[in-house]
Image 1 (cartoon, rainbow, N blue to C red):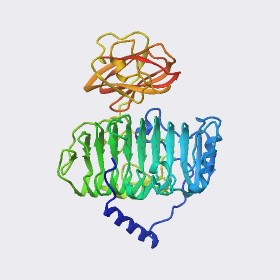
Image 2: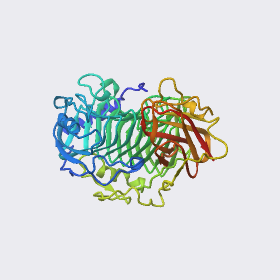
Image 3: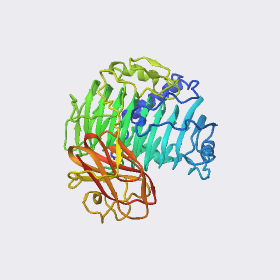
Image 4: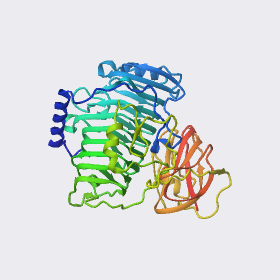
Length: 525
């Protein structure tokens, strides 16, 4: 929603920062590591993981045009590549480059219709000045150790719709780490969000980063009916001097832990339209209405544990304004499929100050509030400490079979939604018991879900295709509540797996010959 303009408090803080910069208080960016640290954490470690350009060529770029040229010079749009960036990227040096392995545009770093890319700041640092980073129809992307600042959607120059980093249209597996995203005001000054996700963006982690001086921190979902996004992790980040959207969640599942929220001027974590937020061991300071459902009567949900609320004020409840405080309690249970280790909330301000943002040497926390250099191997699979309420249950092994399951098809009478649909098709056609109707994605890939009003136990599914232009050649079955992968396969058919209680199950098509037609998505206990 665009109803709130930047507060006078935001402008006053910006003025204070300007004075600090003029007097030399703000430090310059130190030497940065040339290598990508460790491995992706949180939801970016799921769905096959996020490795970026690992195993591919490494190139150096000092202009936006050179970044685009590196993408366009690959053998294909999926050839792995690591692009080390040093210097200032701006409109003057960011031009469109053409090629069969890229789809770029001037005035924005365009990561569009590509995969397997790492963009990492090195040397004296990488600063994207008024140039945003746009990720669209792409997967397996790492952005690390960069600063993106003052990206505008109005005024001059404009870039990326005003988002520092924006993701949209079937984006999967993005890890943004040790980066600094900042603006100099809110919408009335021409800025939009710092970290936005919409139109079927999933499996994203934002870690050890700084988001500051903006009217809007970021959103997940562009409207109350655009609920195809989710499975986002935010950890060890600093949100500072943000008016609202820290973040705004419309549907989906998000996990926020060990973040420091300071000076949230109007509202903070805004869980709405059925979103589920797991909020634990965060430190909220000098802020207002840091958690709740705001500016809508479409309720969202949260599970809270271990948080510190230091000088936080709370507004009265209203018909479209439901703060979680003054004594926040959980109104849902939210589980996550990965292991993690929690720092105590009491040390979060210190550990985040020493690790978060570009130019911090890629330091991470070891779970005991002690910054250290990242380990050379991923730590996301380590067992959590007893204080972590994560559910580290491994992904169950599924069995693909051609034999149809027995019993009652639980999809009949259930609900449904999806990521996209071809003209003239409906999500509801996959649960109507008729093979003469069908759903098709708007292309060769997409997802369709069956959902229930309360947790329902299933242990097998059967996907039945109708004859048409294409057939499914690759798919994944997902627990829509947690994002866990229940099964994978090639051709559509039947899959069994350990009995799982869930409210939503998703059939995601990852490959097809032409546009497939799913006539029925049957579920069984």
